[in-house]
Length: 254
Ligand code: PEP
Image (cartoon, rainbow, N blue to C red; front, side, top):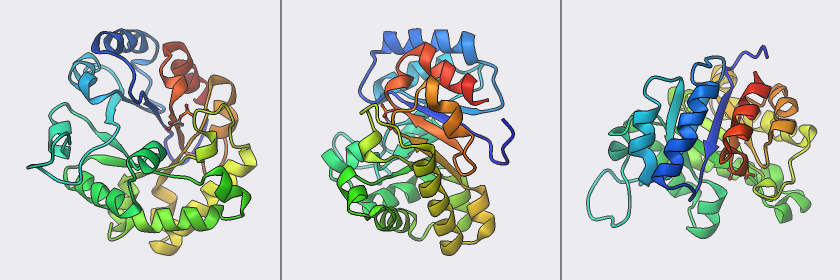
């Protein structure tokens, strides 16, 4: 697939897989995907598996991501993990503001923005998630919701930082539901986000920033989504837990 921006496909394993299961998955992913260079491939295991997965992918083109981090660098924050701690395991990406964290941990755009600043300060690339609920879409509020999230999460980040970041459009109604946004729905919102970035920064930043789509991406729909002009990759949940389907999503996207 010939696109100006390199595709980035990330697997979010969420709260799944023991260390042994993670090692087994990586062993099989390496055989299937270990040398692919046309797509940036990222896996985001739970914190407990980062150390072993980091060792296992050392000689491959697969990169490591975390699913969350603290906005603080150290100190009295029980249960939190700092960016510098992730760096110890060669983590390069960190998912921020996933809709599950927005919903269940009540993460706000302001908090996500603080985390994005902390990620950049530690040279981690944030994958910043935005997306509307079904209720918001049906009320015609999709663009307004996305605008508030993008503006809030990017506040005071400079153009260079935004170009390094990845934005992930994940309609909440499509996550884990088997309902995928239609290509038209996805392209509309991706184009809207890119136009918004151009308005907030400039055209160069907007043309550089990669915008992933997330929401029930599977081997069967990956290609039509990845071919859309403003879709630059995928954030994959459920289908990233199975070696075969994650590998096929990547292979079908090349
Ligand atoms: C996600 O949780 O980011 C996600 C996109 O999940 P799924 O692929 O299972 O819809």
